[in-house]
Image (cartoon, rainbow, N blue to C red; front, side, top):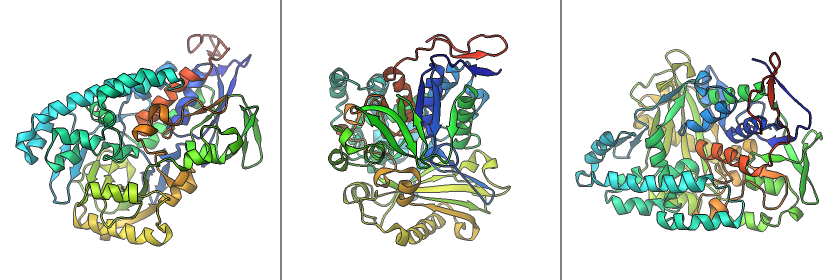
Length: 517
């Protein structure tokens, strides 16, 4: 079916960045009658979810854990289509294998019976605590995600509405502290508190509201896409372009044009200018405010406010391919180091490169052999490290740090790794800053502390400039694919409705592909 955009009175919106948030916003705005254009700095879509191809291996650069698939399904439904016709998701079993430095491991799943069996291995007397903890996690999911996560926090009344729920959740305590009320065993405390690390948070500091992730995963599962996360991005781009959207690559935005505190357009590094009264940034919010806007227009998010904020950790990522197949390694493995709280303190508070580390090992070929040449394996290993506010010379440290990780993996779960490496690529906090324009090289924007979440996080609708909007990991509600897709959904509540009542029409029949606005 071919679609054509009716241009009469059609408003336009310009979107900076083609990550999950930018493309999802484009799809939603197109469905509402806008004509949209996305400007992407890189030569491919995806932003932090872009793809590296090297030596016959396919490496997802960023997010690899897919939860809340209903948020992706919604995008296709807006266009009268089915997500499953474009992308095949496979549910992971287990979701993760969590390995301790002792060699013991915990297979984390959504099956309550299996979870109780895993708990029994570590602390038989605490098996019953699982149901008590999950009851609390479900409360946080209902109040923190379903209710507060869908508030745009566009007015003070939104903040006031959320206060009773925050009190019910005990939001002032950290997730590690909450988990410690249920489990005395230290390994179990780590198992049930590590999730915030997946969205840039320190479990010993971020609000316990993020226990909702455990409930989200149990409800909807943890999935991976056949073809990798890049297959989802590719399908989103196809959908977006098919309904009339445009993406321009190698198009770095260098300035947002503001007149009388209203967005008017944007400039590219090439010198080109594009005009619109609606601009959405899928870039890092701190970078957007400090690099794309003159400070004179920034009353709320001025330089002093941003510099005094606490930012997430960064990441050291090593992508590698092997000539050996490691069949006993799961798709997702969390390798926890010798220390937990002290390591978190070094990364987030001291901002120093610790002698210890914890790792996330991604082996997509456990599910999809097509991600590597025949009889080979594809991996990436990720280590949380300090952002660029720390005093680490990554040009000097990156190879020694990589070798340290390689030696550890060879000694533990990937025996024979060193002799089998046939492809290698390293990504440091410097790359996050240079490739993705991440402020301070922080991988997830501002740290999701209580007073940097919800109302206190950069709003989806700019507090300073009319017509400027934010989407993605560094705005409300936060990082992770569900958070980013939800931020795009929230824009439906704050970006004005299109005045165009006819959206995309079938050229042959004249029928609308969508209902009226």
